[in-house]
Length: 165
Image (cartoon, rainbow, N blue to C red; front, side):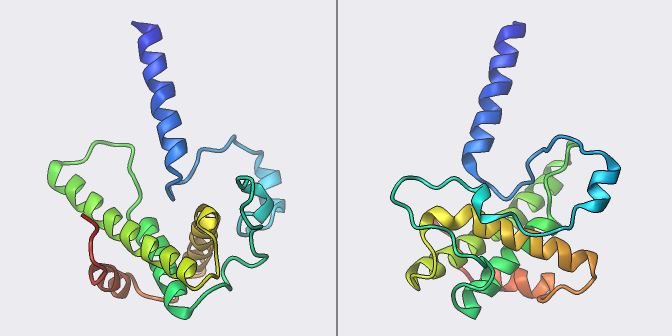
């Protein structure tokens, strides 16, 4: 039974890793002194392995594409930041509201990535790196208490995007 439980845990971890969601990956703990010295910045483009034949990542992932795509991706990151997964069990209604908010974040993020691809500003294999760069920017903006677009405006913008079936 212990082996079966361990295998299920490993399978769940593999599925979550393969999804490439904007959820924060668990990182090994670093000493407080090292964290204080390290500047906060978006993930380096070299941190994302690309499949053979994929074009290289652009130098500035936040500068590519149209303003509309930028706003969609920023809103996606803000919605996810404001509606993180929680470790404690939620009441069914609260769980449903959280999942609905996260679905809005996903839909508008996908719309933003699709715009970048249609504009030929990015390749589909760049999606995770771009999403992570926007998540880092939103975290930085929230710490500075200066988000570029309000959560209400982002939720309205996301609700206007057609839901996939």
